[in-house]
Image (cartoon, rainbow, N blue to C red; front, side):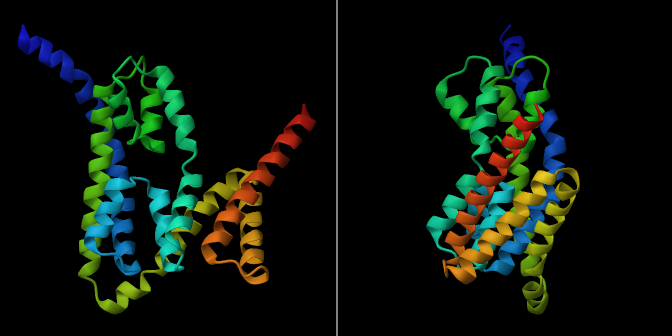
Length: 238
């Protein structure tokens, strides 16, 4: 009887682990690249792994590397990554409607592991979700991200010094690689990228703001303006 009960309790966790395998595999090259770029940025192995453990947000960590390279202050980095991850409030609220009743600490714990990928998998699951399922799902994604970040750093440490220095250009190449496909799909992204670049240039060269504050203000202004224009255009079309 106890064995059957235990197996029933573990079933959602195993389902989560199985659903998370694909995410874990998908995270591998991105986390490896992050670890490699963190090494070229000047972070130590401990700092790189700790960032992945505490932050666990790919885009935010890549942006943090870019801001660190630019000499941006800690407050600006935190504010920029906070703005970037505001969408997680909406994702968490959405999943909460699908979640079974659980203790608050369990929900708070697996809320930390909600990313675009874990949210998508959990949201598409038939029926409800519970803490056991989410822990299994997140364990695979989180483990892959943290472990492969460390492996990427270790692999980068074995490269020649000249190659490590030249790898810093890969950070900008990756951002371009992420941006171009999005530009092809939505005109809104084109305006957002263009306005952000314009405002950042004005802030840096005309207003002589620090690079960190220039990026933060450019992000906020462009997002507000594009959202307002999109809303106005949508209302007009109706």
